[in-house]
Length: 608
Image (cartoon, rainbow, N blue to C red; front, side):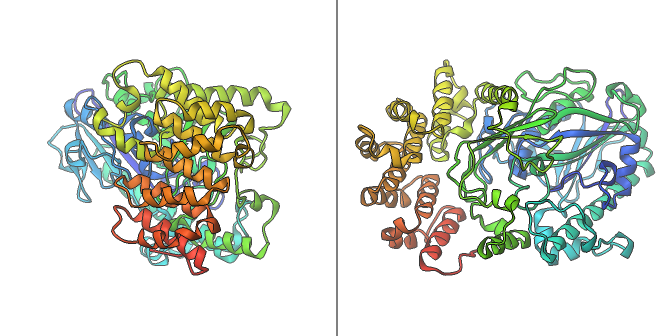
């Protein structure tokens, strides 16, 4: 340790829930991390801001919520505002040697990993620093990724050195989630998950051993964490505890013991969010935390955060706008696209054995009542779960009068958060693409010059009303006439959600027909969807086909998704969908077109 600057070592894993021995899991074989917890503090209520890696990691590196800075869609490339600096840059300015081995996945182009880190590569290591220089070193274990469960080849490669005593018996698992079929294939996935975690634990032990061998153990804060939950359906990509509850262990050396409220081996039950990691590291290093950071330090004695928030947006080729807020006991979820099924077809998760077992059970009519909840064709608008009594989040209490006060509290907390951070996820991706360059950054679209509070309020209200029922049709018509395209989008979307009632409401179909000519592709596409659902398919399909070959790549994806969701009603556009397989700017358009075409033709819809 140089001067008063502590060394910091991060050991991070991909795609694991708290399936560790120190968290009480009876099947886990994790001696090294259990020992780390015995010497450190184990946080029991740590949560990711997303159920998938890249959006979450963008929040970790910036201390900003991904749906505030425009990094919320999986595999996007946002422009950050000039003032927003990834936190390792502050550490480097203070003299730290900062290394990353080796995952980035930050979802923004600038600054690049080369600019953020002294070294970011598989060879990056704190040992390469100058003598006496404090270090911040990140080692990411990628072997636990969902691909390690899905691919036998990767699983066998990652676990090749495990001994027989470190292997699992699939028949012994007594903790399978009740929303999965209990089949040999599902149990094999769980076996792989645990063995991949054991392989990760071995690697963690090696990294800790390197510190001790170099005499840096008592000079270094060690933090272990995961980017989100287990890489299986209804966990990864989702905002339930199964997708966002993560392990977090911090070992404070003696010199930093004052930052911990607990003695070694104790637990901390305060709420922690991954967006808090950046300000916490600056706090530990004795550096000021920028006022712009939306996370808060979780060490020392700051006021505990009352809520942990989460956001789900585009996952690969599918949009599904979901928001969540978690207090120590309850989780509230708001589905802004409730007409979408839980299990939208997405190429990557469909290849996994557990997802195939779910699909097999669906076709065979063999779903239990609990399994059927998450194979439903649509979702409830609101969900509320008591995690103390319902850890798998099966019993939705949103309609229970006994929990009305909790529902109101968390609903208000979510709305306040969305307004506070300016939730960019409520804006269609094609519209973000249209505005980002002129605004200077994605963040500036809703935070630019001038007061944007009226727009934020109108956008949030329109998005909320779009799923509140046909009684909101008059307000949705007003939204469709708003001067901002993002608000108009939600007006058209909401009218389409209530197609059965809306087609007979005064002026609705005429207003939607006019909106087909809207300059904003998202508004035109949402209006076309609404008209198709109201029976005016010729007019709606013509607009969708036009956007399918337009200049805005995300409008192309939005259009093909609507065509896919229309099922048989989209058959007249089959030729246009086949044309969409060629010369597309991203693979997600091709995947969705393939899915739609194969469904209409009755062929296999598994695509690369």
